[in-house]
Amino acid sequence: MRLLKYALAGSLTLVLFGIVGCGASGQEELQQWMAEQRDATKPRTEPLQEPTKFSPQVYDQERSVEPFSSQKLAQALKRDSNRVTANAALITPELSRRKEPLEASPLDAIVMVGSLIKAGQPVALVRVDNLIYQVRAGNYLGQNYGRIDKVTETSLALREIVQDASGEWIERTATLQLIEGSK
Image (cartoon, rainbow, N blue to C red; front, top):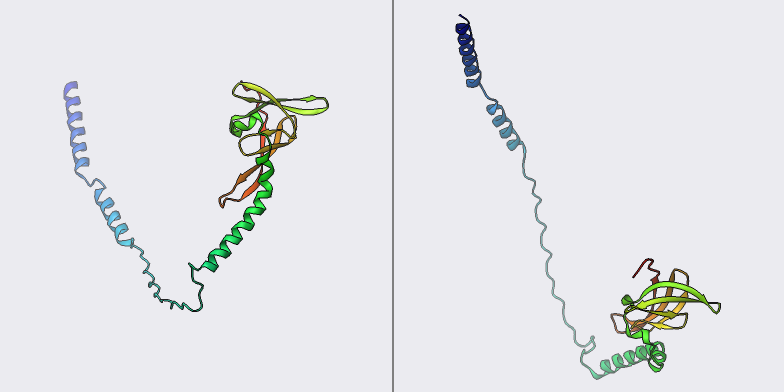
């Protein structure tokens, strides 16, 4: 009897699941919503602007300067020579003095590792190729004619003379900071 009740309850459960499974699964609602969204969404395209009309310019030779004239070349050479003499005043003293040993190393290969006071003057300790050097204001460092202007406990400031993109010699400042705990 008990077995019959369980069999009847199991078959009734299977019939109920079968009826529920055959019903609407919600796919129709989803399909309808997607169709509505597709119809509601319209692409927005902006019209292209009209291209600008090309208007050729008339070449008037009488009013223009001939680009290859000797007069124009002479003016350009004179202007360049004036610029060179102004820049030469900055670099000439650097070319005539004797180079110091630390000028052979690039500035990014020089590391400040300490500082001290020697004879009342601040002195920076810099390391180049695992050798320690003492430098003070007035000494030269780096490959760009860098002259040390100021030494403090944590940094040294220097002035370099470099060429800019147009080839002119200009001054720029650089700083080496103390690197603590460096090997």
